[in-house]
Image (cartoon, rainbow, N blue to C red; front, side, top):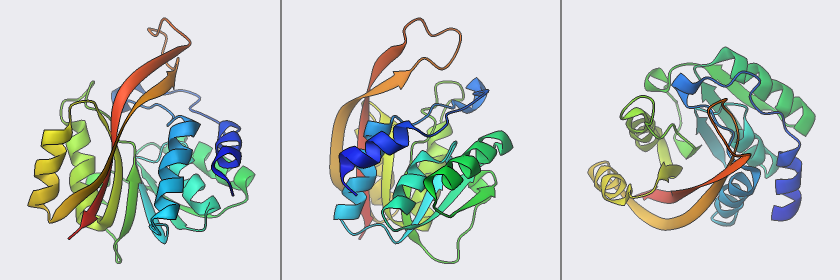
Amino acid sequence: MKKRKLEIFLESLDGFKNPKITLEQYVTPPPIAAEIVMNAYLNKDLNIVYDLGCGTGILAIASALLGAYSVGVDVDKEALIIAKRNSIKAEVEIELIQNDVRFFEVSKRGTVITNPPFGIQKRFADRIFIEKALEIGDVVYSIHSIESEEFITKRARAKGFKITHLWKVKMPLRKTYSFHEKPFKYIPVEIYRMERI
């Protein structure tokens, strides 16, 4: 599947019906999701994929469409119901698990692809996700707010990882909450690929 076709299909998936600001629920924009997953495919990283904080399942589904065995983990049952519906629409099977990522365990390491909360509502919320990703992954793709490089580099080194790629992009976020004033807002983000040494 070509990247543009993947992106167009991901646009058709359902988003959050009642997004929870306390969980910083935003749908990963389809162009960003397609870009990350296509890079993972080209790097031969799509075997077992764990999507931590999977929300409506866009990253797990994109990975499954490109041949991965995908596992989506989220604490929110409502989000997982939408993810299940989206996986049926995509005609792919993904394993969905309701769990706090802190308590999620795996029997086999794989690739983690995650768009964690940035820690705007709950300070350091992103750290929980990056710590778990570095524990269960051999390769990690993770989206973070701008100027996270020093922190991510330090955590990666401490856990025996190296950063192999860093993309700095402007992520288009759709209006999700009532306090948002514009239909779209572009947020500068950093996307990391990290590999266990």
